[in-house]
Each structure stands twice: as structure tokens, then as C-alpha cells.
Amino acid sequence: MKAGDAFDEALAMPLVDQHCHGVRRDELTRAAFEGLITEGGPSPAGTTHFDSPVGLAVRRWCAPVLGLEPYAAPDIYLDRRAELGAEEANRRLLRVAGIADFCVDTGLAGEDLLTPAEMGRLGEARAHEIVRIEAVAEEVAVRSPPATAYAAELTDALARRADRAVGFKTVIAYRIGLDFDPRPPGPREVTAAAARWLGGSGRLTDPVLLRHALWAGAEIAGDRGLPLQVHTGLGDTDLSLARANPALLTDFIRAVPASIVLLHCYPYVREAAYLAAVFPHVHADIGLTVTYTAASSARVIAEVLELAPFHKILFSTDCYGLAELCHLGAHYHRQGLATVLTERSGEWSPADAVRITRLIGADNARRLYPLNG
Picture 1 (spheres, rainbow, N blue to C red):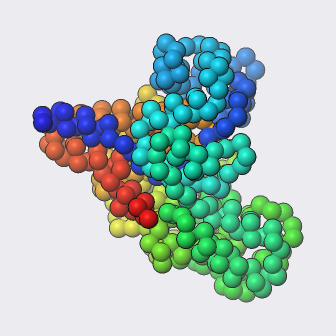
Picture 2: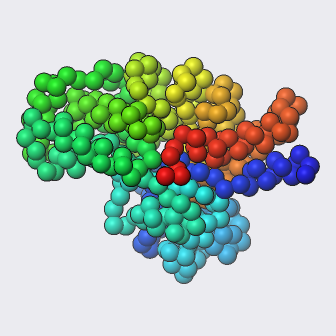
Picture 3: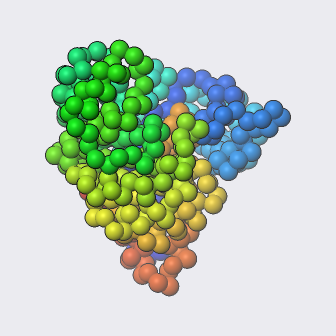
């Protein structure tokens, strides 16, 4: 086999999507669709979110999957999507992405989203659960245990969920930022905070309880050999970007007993690459970033490849709501990685390019997550 053929084969191999969400099972209005191709709110009057990198990418790369010419107008695209129906559109877009395994964060689960099993069925892939720590804490709170029993009940609940999951995830960046006290709180602090929270609002925002839940999940993850995914960087307007810099996690990283996967990272891609380079248990993911930067995604991939060891970089789509985002995440990963590795062909051998492609696309995730259980 020629080196070029081997590289093309490596790029086309089935990928492990190590972080994603369910996609919508229902028919979508234009407003609903546009709301899912942005991390922001509605576009100003007279404008459209189709006028964005990811909006143009939908028209270019998703339209042919649905049987349209490239660059189909938004209304034509959405009419065709409605004609096919949500299930058929989801099936086509998930399967063309070429995913072998979906690792699905179920923290945003709802009746309108496909379950992990349904994602796997429509995508002809295996599906696995990623447990969102804060969601489990909120489920425990609904049962209104005594404040003195809350910590033990949360630990038990997380341990039970770990029995059928391949990893944990935290969204503490959304709740209080990543500049939190990295130490686990003491038992008295947890009981006092639980007494204030239980019976009140269901959303966990108390810094003490968020730190406690994070450490409870991290310790179970460490004991079970499961990774802990941490949202960093790019997110919706509920997040303060300056407080989502992964470098703020440095002291927590030094102490945590589990492997860490830094999710998304943009615009702090270099910070994430540095942390992956210097800490043996830290890994960097650029899912979501690659999709939303679309035609410019090769530059983002090049940034993470500047410093992060190649065995520490993971592929994901972070698709949520739209199967289009799964297809685009996989497409721009392959396209961007091919561009970067081709540009470096004078420095790295063809065999190196093939190995790096396989590591990032699937092999690193298969080593980190228990996907064969």
C-alpha cells in the first residue's frame, strides 16, 4: 500500500466520539433549528444564524447528505429536512459521520432528545453513557434526604451510575467558574450547605456543594479507572468565558486522582495543550470548537498539535440537538487534520501521519475509556 493510501484510509476510519449529546427526535421550526446552530440567543431582526461559519457549513456539507445540491438556501434545506422527517434526516447525518462509538453526556436528557441507545441505533454505532455529576446531585436533592445523609446518598448514587457508564463530566465552569477553591470541603461544610440547599431550588449553584460533588465524582472515577471530563472555554451565555480558562484548574489537576479530559477549550486551546503536555493524566479535546470554527478549523487543530502529545488529544463532536453537528464535527476533524498533517509532511514521515491520525481519531479514546465492557 502506498503511504498516501494508508493516510487516506486512516482519515476515513470509524471515529470514537468521546463527548456528545442526544439529537432532537422531533420536527424543527426554522427558529428552533437556528437556535441549535449557535451558542447564543436569537439573531437580531433581519439577520440569520445561517450567516455564520457553521450555518454555511450546514448548507455546504449537510445539504448533499439530504439529497440537495451544495449551498442550498436555508428554506430549501429545512423544507427537505421536514420532507424526509426527523428520523430519516438523523439517520443519514449520523451514519455519514462515520462514528463507531458515541459517548453520550446524558445530563441534558429529555423526551425530545434521542437516548444513547437510539443514537447508536440510528448511527450504526455503539453507545455509552457519560454521567454528569451535577445532574446526579440534583436528582439526589429531589428526594430531600436529611442534610446529614446527603453526602453519603450522593456518593452511593454516583457509584451506581458509574457501574454502567464510561466516564463522568462536570459543568462546574457554568455554575461558579474554574477559579474555585481546589480543596474538597469538609463534612461539616457539606452538611451545612446541604441544609441550606435541600428543599429549595433544584439547580445546584452552591460553591461548597459543587466542590463536594466534583470531588465525590473524581474519587469514584479514580477508583474505577474512569476519566473525568471538564467543560472549559466555549459555551453559551450562562457561562463567564474568562472564568472557563482551563489554566485555572492547575491546582485541582495537581491533586485530583482521576484522568482529566479538558473539553472544547476555545479560545484557550494553547492553555489546554500545555496542561496536556505537562500533566500525565490530562488530555485535550477540541470538539465543538472544530465544528463552530468550520472552514477555519485547521488552525485550531494546528494549535493543539503545537505542544500537546499526540497520545493526549481526543476527537469529539459535542453534537447537541442536531445530527448536522455530528456530521460537521467529524467532517472538519478529518479535513482539518489532513490539512495540518499534510503541511508538516516534511517534518513527519507518512507513517507518523497515519499513526497520529489513528491515535486522535479513536485509539486514544479506546485506551482511556472502557468501551469494550
